Structure formats: C-alpha cells, structure tokens
Length: 323
Image (cartoon, rainbow, N blue to C red):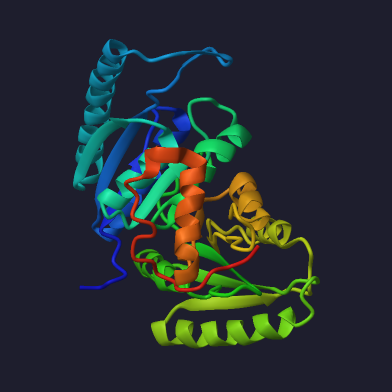
C-alpha cells in the first residue's frame, strides 16, 4: 500500500456557505483519490450565539434537540454527496469546544487530510481564522486544507511550493506528491531567501537543488523562480500566487518552539488569512524534546477538552520549523 495515499478526508461543517463550499472541494478530492469522506458537525455546548453579541447557556434538553437536528441535516448532506460524486461518505455529530473536538476526531478517525472553510457561520473571516480554522491548523494531527469562500475547486493544476530557510522545509513534498499525481499538476517552486538570515540564499539554493532531483525522479513537471532576499515572505507568496494564477499553495505551517506558548508563525497566519486559493498547511511534527511542550501548549489553550489527543499522530516530517 502507498503510505502516502490519502484514504480518509475529514470535513468539519457548520452549515455555513463557506463550510459547504469547502465540502464540495473535499468531495471532488475524495473522488480523485478514491478516499472516504467524513463529515463532522460540532455543537458548541458551552455557548449558544444569539445575534452577534449575546450568548446563552445550552441546557441538556436544548443540546439533545440540536444534536437531533444536526444529525438529520448532516445525514441528508452526506446522502446527497454520495449520490453526486459516487464516493463513500460517513457523518457524525459531537459537542464541545469546536477546535479541539475537530482535532480529537481527526486523531480518532486517523484522518489523512482535514478540509475546512476559512470562515464559518459567524461570517467574519478574520475572526474565524483567529479562532476555529486557525486553531485547527495549529493543532491538527494531519495536514489541513483551508478553502476560501465563494468558489469551488474541482482540481488543482498549478501548485505553488515556497521554499524558505527553515528546517524541514522540503519534507512537505512527501505529502504533496500524492496530490500532484492525482491532479497531473505542475509545480512552481518559489525560492524565498530572507534578508534577516545572511546565509539563507545559499541554503535555499541548495534545498531547491535537492527538490529538483526528487521532482525529476517522480516525473513532476516543474519550474522555479528564485527571489532576492526579502523580509516580506508571506506577501511574496501571495503576490506570486496571484500573478502565476496558481490554484493551490502548499506551505509548512511554521512553529515557534523557542517560547513557552508555541504558536503558528506570522508567515502561515498571513497566507491562510489572505490567500484567494486553497492553502495546504503541513505542520512539522515536534522534535522529541518538544513533544511535551506541544501537549502543554494545547492543554493551556483548551484545558481538559483536549485530554484525548495523542499528539502528534505519526507525522510526515521530523523537523520543527521556526517562523
């Protein structure tokens, strides 16, 4: 069996237009990859939004009603996808705090890929990125594909692959390779040396050279662009994606292990927030010495709600990346 096969795609949905848009993109991927699609709806059992500002506690009877209604809706959506795409679709509902519940479910279901919209039912894109989607990218045990609203992607033909001066920057290709194969896609490799790191140009040049060897071996159609050292890496990626009309950006979700509360770096945050195309974020697995710190960080964010996460699940990379 191909260890890089995408067999199980998890899609959290909150019934917003953005999440249903991401669901169609995920269904098209599942069909191409021969993968099972799992739909998950998480009910926030702590607070029930009323308008945009007031909140009400959810009582047990209300929660039961919400579960029943959500289950009926998710089941109908799953049946429609199965008929339209001819794929295996399962669905589930749960309750709790949304980001950790999604991550726990991804772990339990051994999801290979998690696909979600870049904003949800609130309608405030930046706010949602700062809470649900952003938190999932930060803690998910598998790669996360975030999908912008207002458009569906049936396939990916032109993929942008930035290479920065970061440890483990090339390992994400191991996962991306399967997407390239299934889409018969071309790859644009963007070399991004940084002005703040004097030796970064040589480092990026060397790693792009290594990547070219792997691409040639795999028969991938690729081209490269090497930029001059810059202190605006995220902006360069977004501008290149627009100029070259790429339909997928694949990045390593950079982590900072040098402070107590490690976090996704500003590079990742800016790209996920502002990209006009889907972004595949592949978070490096912590080094062994960082594993306990990673668990403590998640627990600090979410408390006992994440006690069931075995963090991280078998990762694709072994190095940590700093922003």
